[in-house]
Length: 160
Image (cartoon, rainbow, N blue to C red; front, top):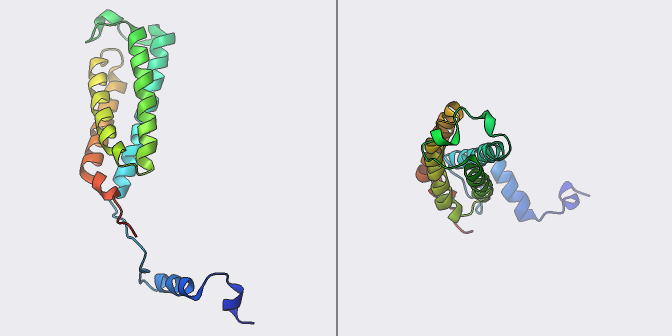
């Protein structure tokens, strides 16, 4: 009994695998661009930003004394309860869109840019309450927008 009789794959599959090992890509192999990693990084950072929004929202809802200024000292003078619910909803949405972006959903690119943009605007408005975290989050939002806008088209794969 020869070795190819033990292998359940067809001879064509075995040939394409052997060509792949020698450096030749099989006919149905689609090579992804290395820039796809930036979009995947942006998706993970979008989920991280959503987690930060969730934490800020729950802190604003349950422990208002943590923040550096009172609600009247914020750029947009609304209560911390309102800010808390905005952060919780925005954070959950950012995590959901980040997961969809990792899954390769085409609509998640547009929504991810919108979420990152308004996240940066929200952190600017909330900057007096937590300046260090806000500055870091704004920087991350800018990287997310850049990665999705510049390299988002790399996620498109040709149909086989």
